[in-house]
Picture 1 (cartoon, rainbow, N blue to C red):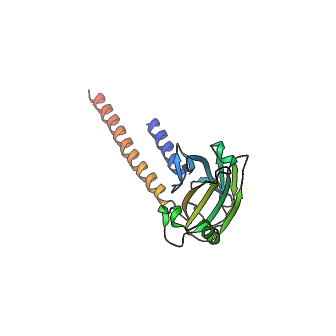
Picture 2: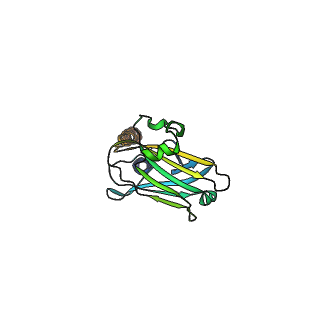
Picture 3: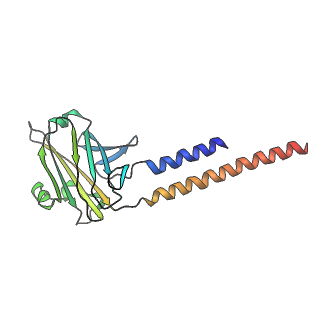
Amino acid sequence: MTRLMGLMLVLLMAVQSGPTAAHGGVSVEDDVCIMRIGPYRAHFTGYQPEYRATQEFCEDIPVVAKAIIVLDFIDNVLRGMSVEFNLLRDTDGLGAAARFDQLGSMQQIRERSLFNVPAATYPRGTITLEPTLDQSGWYIGVLSATDPETGGTLHSVFPFRVGVRSYWRYGVALLVILALSVLLYRVSGRKRAGGASTTAA
């Protein structure tokens, strides 16, 4: 019984503390948010220090407020590339399926951008973004990395929602509780039945 209670606690903690769902160029791998820029990768970590200082998110942002997004390059080749970031409001209803070729030219993306970080190199491999997200709904982040030698540019597009309540987590937690409660009831019932049989004998 003690083991079952411990298992229940571990599962509930996992459901509540895991990163939120990801879309587009960002995915969850081994419980870590990874952004893909062509063949290259970067760690993606988001925070909302004013509201949930210790909770990380993987794209979808729970509260309409200022956010801090930190990108740490995994592949060192990105440190020598010129990296630009643009944040757009999804006015075309593209949602989670948004792609770069649906957003227009780079000039059009810059003109629509709510938050722009001009192209620069990051030899230390870390970019910190601090956009203020003042409306709920879908946004689209576009990270563009240009090779200074070839002039080729790679794009990572990651749509995300702001002002999202993760009610699915509570649903999963409830199902876990119900399933383990039934299992606990059956195990304890068998023990009682076994004890009664021994007494009768």
